[in-house]
Length: 200
Image (cartoon, rainbow, N blue to C red; front, side, top):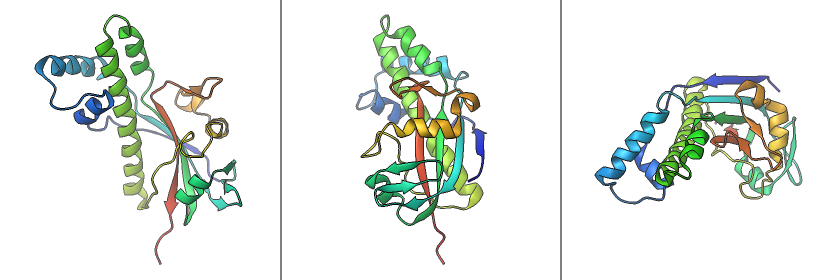
């Protein structure tokens, strides 16, 4: 098993339609909403970070799930997702604490702005995960399976604890967990991604 690596990326391109989707808004926004969204985007334009720490490790199927070396996971869903892989990546990604601060600031006084900041944070962390994996594909010439996160399917959220012990994201990129294993900052993601075997 290799060591833990850290990458800091530039801001991925914005997807305004995704932001509106995360906010539960359909159709073309009117001028008032567009102006409000522009205002929210301006508030976070220079305050977001795009950081990832990750670990590459082996994949060994067991009777009940997968053995990664640093942890064993009982999950038939994850085992199916990693079928045909003998290597995988585990990563933690974050866009930092600013979205949480904006949501708290506007939660009572301007709930629409709080909702838009929630949606911006959701779009930004998803865009970061996609950009990070695209970068690895380009740099290493590898094919990757879809990412799979703790709490999805039958993969228990308790796996979060093993991931955080192995990667130490609190020290490396400023992401910690609460006693209930929720991440702080909230606009953070943990995921496991299978590396597909090269075709011979």
